[in-house]
Each structure stands twice: as C-alpha cells, then as structure tokens.
Amino acid sequence: MKTAAEIRDEIESLSAIPTLPTVLTDVLKLIDREDVSVNQIGDFISEDQALSARVLKMVNSPIYGFPGRISSINQALMLIGLGVLKGMLTGVAIFDVMQKTMVGLWEHSIGAAAAARIIAQKAGIKEVEEASVAGLIHDLGKVALGVCYPAEFGQCVERARAEQKYIFDLERDIMGVSHAEAGSWLARKWNFPRQLVEAVAYHHKPRLAKEAKKLAATVHLADALIKMTGFGFGGDPFVHPVDEEAWALLGLSDDDVKDILLELEDSISGTVLSF
Image 1 (cartoon, rainbow, N blue to C red):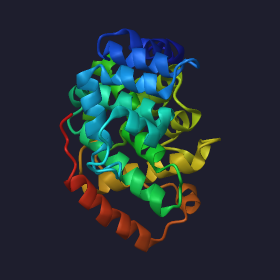
Image 2 (cartoon, one colour; image 1 turned 90 degrees about the horizontal axis):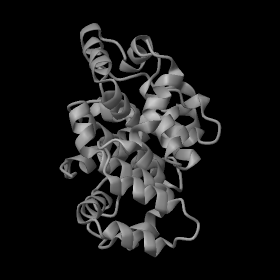
Image 3 (cartoon, helix red, strand yellow; image 1 turned 180 degrees about the vertical axis):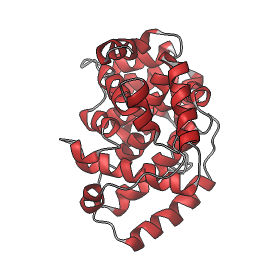
Image 4 (cartoon, rainbow, N blue to C red; image 1 turned 90 degrees about the vertical axis):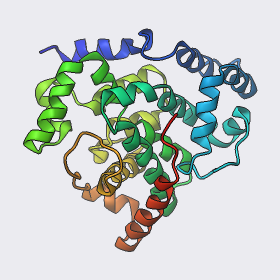
C-alpha cells in the first residue's frame, strides 16, 4: 500500500493529465490572478463554446434556482461569484470522467447540489449558491481516486455492495485514504475557497470542520437526503446516519425535512442530466 503522502502527490498532479480539459486549469489560474477583472474571466470562458454552454446549462438548471434567467457567463459571474464559479467549473468539466468513474455518480452529485441549496434556504444560510456548488463537488475525491487507482477504487465499490459497508470506510481500509481527503487535497491544490475545501473534506464528519461547520453540515445532510430519494448512486448501499451535531447546527425540524424532500423531488425531476 502506498503512503498517504505518495497518494496525495499523485492526486495533486491530476491537473496535468488529459482527463481534465486544459481550459479548466487555464481558467482556474486566471481566476487567481489579481490583475484580471470579472469581465475578462467571463470573456475567456465564453470563448470556449463547450465549457460556456455547460456552465449556462448548469446555472439555469433547477438546482440553482435561476431556471431560464441567465443568458451570459458574465451575468452568471455577477450572481454566483468567482469562488462558487471554481466549483461549478470543476463539476461541469469532470462530467465525463465522473460518469466513467461510477455509474450514477453524476446524478448523485447534482442531486446533492439541489438538496444543499434547498437545505441552505431552509436553514437561513445566505450563500445558497456556495452550498449548491459544495454539494456538486463533495465527491470530487471519488473521481480522483477512480482516475489514479481504478482497480483499488473499483474494489471499494464492489465490496461496499457485496458486504453492505460504507465506501468511505472501505477506502480507508483498502487505500489508506478516503475520497473526502483526496477531494480536499485537489480542491486545496486548485486554490478553492477555504469554505469549499472544508465542505469537501468534512462532508462525512462535519463536526471536524473549523471554518465551515454549517456548510459541511449542509452537504452532509444533502448527501443523506439525496441517497434517501434513490436518485443517482454515490457508492453506498444504504443511507448514512445524520450526525447529531450537524442536525442541531442546522436547526431544522422534521417538518422542514419533509418540505425539503418534497421540493427536492420537484427540483430533480426537472433537472437535465446531460452536460
């Protein structure tokens, strides 16, 4: 078994392999430059027709709450901000890879994005778009592990099904790291906002988050609720229990959860899955 440090080095080098389009790494670098305006970033994304079409389709989908209202990349940027854009770009850019990594993972991810947005609204969280993007990319680490270690990750998926175990636990047993760790390494390497890094890192253990406890709790609950609906597949054969501290932090009632599930059903039923 490789050490965690060796695995981390391979995960962090993912930006250099052809699995991710060059335009994504170029945009991420551009966003990090202090001498570039929002309009310049929007114009740069707009030059890539395939990527800009995917971004507009995503931001206009029911999971973001702006259905049919966003007509340009610059308009999207003004509404969602650069930090959220990073996560969204990553989500749409790895769409093809996510589909190959695990059947149903993309659907699970956009379902979690929809659930996180609805939960954030119910819990009075102002940054609902950030919550939605955190839900979209929370399983980024599964893609990273699937690309770097396809045989080992495939073993985790198969054993989770056969032995009725959580894939999170099997990853630690088989590879020595979890998808939450792997995803956080990649998100940190790509200079994602700290809030998003923590949401990815602690979506299974939200109580460990330091700066983004409420966001991590939101994604944690969103992950459970979308599994409950049966929409998509995240690798687990059953729904994980909701962390009591996360539940208390969000301050939701049982009736709130019923409302969230009803709204979620409406949201995902109108979601276009192809990007």
